[in-house]
Structures are given as structure tokens and as C-alpha cells.
Length: 139
Image (cartoon, rainbow, N blue to C red; front, side, top):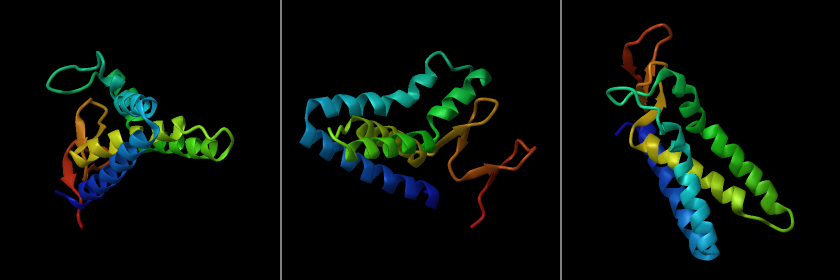
């Protein structure tokens, strides 16, 4: 496993532990929020597959948007800001954490964002500009 995937695995483990703790403390409503938002990034896959595991090129942007860590991080940040204010609502923070956990598990398993042709760009592999050839990252 490459170092980048190892870091994602550690992050995923920590986030999942925090989510499980929140669900135990907050009960079924938190569990429902966590499960729904952990699955939500994959709505981009509904009806999006072409052939050989690739996405239809017109669906790549939506998939990449929902699988970008920044979206989940912004939801966590907004949730923490809301949590700090009365009535201390935890829903957005937990939703963002579940969203980020989904992305972290994907990255730990080696699934990165999608290339323009719909194929998966493996985590730890970069594409040079203008080239379709995948090259491993150099340490």
C-alpha cells in the first residue's frame, strides 16, 4: 500500500470511530444521518456507468464534485460553526464527517477521482498534462 493510501486509511479509521461514538451517544437520529450522508456521494453513480467500469463522460464532473474532500470539509466546518451556536445542532457536522469518511474509505481502497474518459485514477498515481499514460509518483 502506498503512503498516500495509508494516510487515507488512518483518516478513515479515525472518522469512522468518531461517527460510531456520535451514533452511540446521540442515538438513532444520528445513525440515520450518518448512514444517509455516508452513501450520498455515490448518488452520482446512478445511471452513470458506460462500459468496463467507466462512467459516462458527461457524469464525470458530478462524480468528482461529490467525491472531492473539500465539499465534505466545508460541510464539517459549517456544522461545527452551527454546533457552537444555540441550539447546538449536530446534524451538519455529523453529515459532513460521514461524507468525508466515505471519501477517505474510497481513497484508502485506491479509488481516486475519475478521469475525463470516466476511468478511475488510482490514488498515488498522477497523469502528466496532455498524456494518457499513468505514471507512479516518485518518492
